[in-house]
Image (cartoon, rainbow, N blue to C red; front, side, top):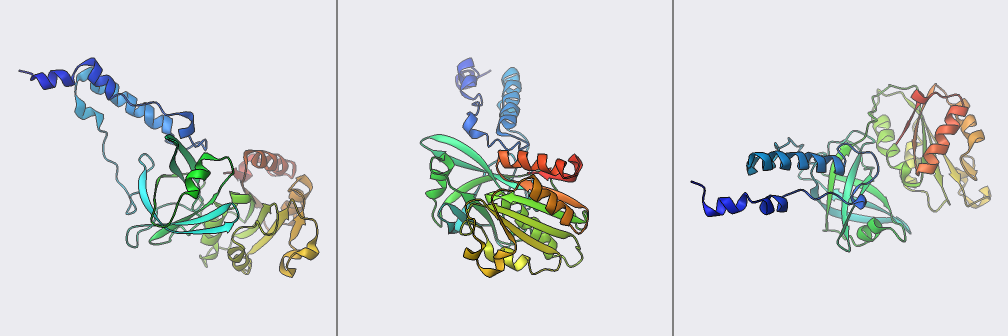
Length: 315
């Protein structure tokens, strides 16, 4: 015989209180992740509908997923503690998160994570790519640019060492394999440099990987170039070249001598891309990351330069 409490638990009102809440548009990062926050909502909704139809609350709990040592999960947000936060420019931070023991994050170079933030009781989500080596032990780092009117920026600027942030992942469909391409032509604007960093480092860390790399970083000014020391170190390898395009400077004499010959001024356009493609030492495969407008323009320029659609990847 069903108790009075069990009968109350099976009322329509009780089941409606358990119904998953549909995400707000702000909760979607817009980067095409799979599963998206809306995919997870529909999965939870289907589970709830099946549980309600059979009046079996145990069906509300899906199967537990296996996790890597860092407990990173593409479906569930996991807490990570901030161990350090460095300001690289006036609006960009490099943030280090601690991992348990000597565990690794479990990403392939170039894959990204989703960060969840809360501002004024509004949940927001954005995608960020770790810049730390894929085999880094005990930590991972991300590069985050803050915008004056950005909601996530307000959340990030409230961070301090010891604070907790929530991530899920990994996501991303580009999987680099050593010696897969003759040459990688990396075209990055601003924080679009992020996915290039672990891919580049995986190449130079591997003595057996003989892939040539030409990296072009597009920034407003010399001061706004991220990770200068890292890029200078990488450019010392026999198979790596770095170039820069500065949109708000025009005088090479104002630059350090080591940057004068490898810096152009203005914007990365069709003529310069044709020149870069023609100067590649082997048949290039291009990687492109930046704003939506930058990515669209560069894809068009690459096609005009003779590359086919299967010869580039847009992050």
